[in-house]
Length: 114
Length: 112
Picture 1: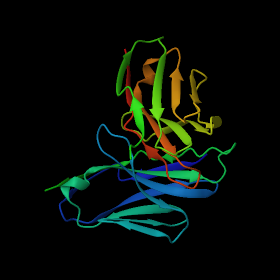
Picture 2 (picture 1 turned 120 degrees about the horizontal axis):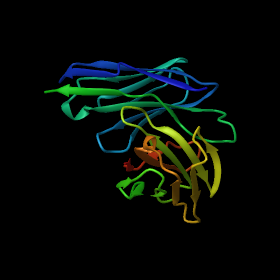
Picture 3 (picture 1 turned 90 degrees about the vertical axis):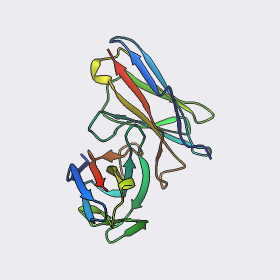
């Protein structure tokens, strides 16, 4: 069974204080690892897809990296508008029957204080 | 371009009732997936449809069913509602297996 564990559950940072969020996963074969951002009362917003160990993706103050067992979302000099819940999800190569369903972690609730 | 749209945005039902939730995918997307998100948890996969065929199903009881129409829109049906069905129901669409899934803002279902 595919599993995704995110840590920490919650993180409070000062504006400008860089940090990293962790996503540990077990999957029979990884098709892709996804990072999403979710604001209160909204659906998840797609950020990145990573496909193989060693891959990195960047967008503004965010950088995602991938190893064979975990992924990190690095946040550099965050601003209050970066406050949100960050979700990690995996998609298996063979979900049985060809389904593309994502397995999500519980998320990291990030608060950036001015 | 319009994103994934879901209706209604909020719904209140009582135990034992039936509910139908609707989803319109991004234009050109042929795959629609449904997820249930309970407060404080990540989304949990319910169904995926591609080209009007069911491609996969998560660990949900037979009270949950879905279908996809020729215009690729989709409905999620839940029968015999239980208190535990209270959640945010999310719809996601993608063009194919190699593209990321894009989510709507969901339907908040409350069961009294």
